[in-house]
Image (tube, rainbow, N blue to C red):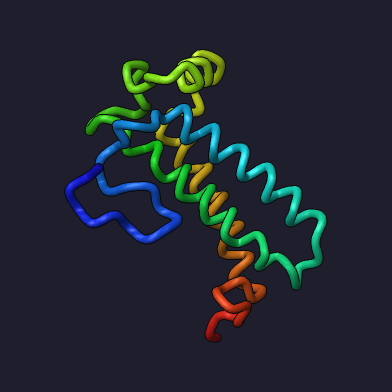
Length: 131
């Protein structure tokens, strides 16, 4: 565990990349949760989208962990960062998913979904954000 106080949920860790979960596993989690959340959003009225907010925030947090594995001055997660079978397999299948630009796009898109939920009243307690 990182020496600093763990961040509040749904964040996974501090400023350093995880030594337990590799970037391929984070991407797997982010994709699975995003797919589930997307299906929920498509199949519920907008007034109920707040019920999916927590899982969308979890997906955002998982996407945000991946760029931590990119070394300074580099544009992609290096192959050596993948230590699990899941992560290695994901990297072999889709190495471009671990490029900085692609990751930034995924983060922007996931944050936009989260902002959309908040816009229609998805903040804690279902209250609409202040205007």
